[in-house]
Image (tube, rainbow over all chains, first blue to last red; front, side):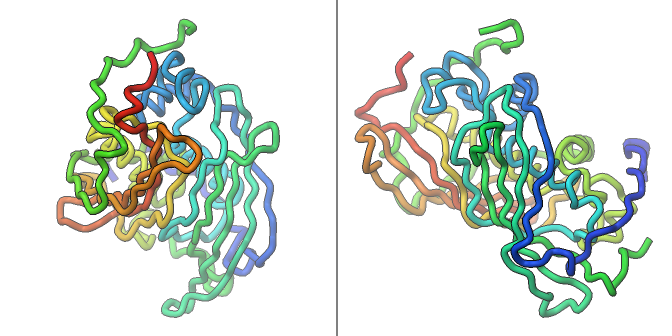
Length: 166
Length: 166
């Protein structure tokens, strides 16, 4: 590890293994207040389209006013998933997501929460210590509107495989 | 506009309208050097899983060493798309993407480029001044490996509809 490494993250207790993602289970969790500063900062770094950076351009766009980049919403969703359960799970990462949609804009001042539903669960064909979980994860705003929905696959260790080696 | 607004982005000439996204057309563009600092910064904000933040944890993970969040790779792709053509296009935003996959990890030190292929183009059924374009966009590393692939839909104004009103 070199000097630019941040301090080690605090050790987390692993509570959620593959077996804990039963099909049909719904989790509601998370809360992010979307600030104007965060919307502008993300857009300036990663998505400098005028409707994400400039009030006047946004007013002329399909969004009607300054709206967060959809990738910013996805990143906020990932943070809520991490804090909501992933950091206390035996997660091994994700190969991808399907059906990522942004049905409504996210505006500064919105308050976002998450709802995740387990759609499918199966053991890995090639790795006996691993299982796959397919979740629909939705981001909702303070009006209950879905502003992002996606179906993601995650790899998790099985409970009897124990925590990752340390 | 209030005091927290950044300066107006420089006016861009609109060169690319819906008609310019012919099916089969391939665009290669963009270049991002992935720094360790950027990987850690994005992970700390949005995806603080240990394999994105900590060398020792990453060495024990499926990635083998510190790897960028897949959402960071998506955000870098968005930036390359903006700089490559979107900011000079009559883009109106995107309703979503399909088949977002991360077939190989992105490591600090990697140099990423983009390849976008037009898969489908059709006029909007409801808005005569607008057309839809479906692109496969791929992020490649310096070894030519695809590290992200997705199929995204974009809305664009038609040429005869002219630039957005100002």
